[in-house]
Image (cartoon, rainbow, N blue to C red; front, side, top):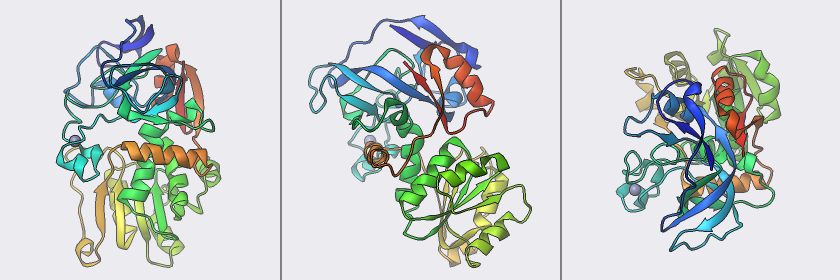
Length: 348
Ligand SMILES: [Zn+2]
């Protein structure tokens, strides 16, 4: 089969279109014919060597592919050849404390070779075929395309989990989304709306206004304005936002997020919090019971729930650009240049 192979960490050009052996499914695994795979920040971090020192090369990258099951390994139940599926990305153990309490994205095995992430610790979807654990396969209804589905494991699923799980948005709560114009942000606007929230989209560039409004934002503020957190207060009767999702996670946005947060509010950090930074937390974190948390990827049920939201038309997967799989280098360059609205996908 043909695949994009990473043999050394570095720039997009390090991805090479090569002939590789077609993988054979091991017990408990299935082989997929890849239909589509997304291009996202995790892959940029991995390819450049900024993430996951434990991962080894060469590697076929690509998280959360969507495709058709073409072959079953031994001992596979619940998945049939010909079935269309999308693949949840984390290979959790199912037995550790975090798996047992329903927090499988914190599974103790995710950062090592016993479990790990598809496309990082084992080969992923930048290929004609990929073998994955059957238990990670989530069936797709006909209404959900491969292109839309492949955005679920790493983009839409995590924001649904952040809104419904980590932030526990209640109906009519005010939700401030910082970085709402980005690939995750545009989907977060829709996910917060699907949870019943009233969305204030904080964006850097006015070019994003039309896109965030089309996704259902109720109001927009520009982070270029010096008083933008005051504007958030004004839009919320002086209280501030009940929930803040910060996709930028810089020192500036995080301190703005804290000052925009209402009593009993929840801040969910969604970006790569700069290493070594210290978040200064005012005493009212304590006296007014605000919470600060993060959100790490999406579990299998988050993926299944999100597929349903897309099938029901409550969230639309925003595919800004399509590339052939062999043009992954061009797609990575376009992503890093900020040229993609929503997400780019590679189609087989
Ligand atoms: Zn576990």
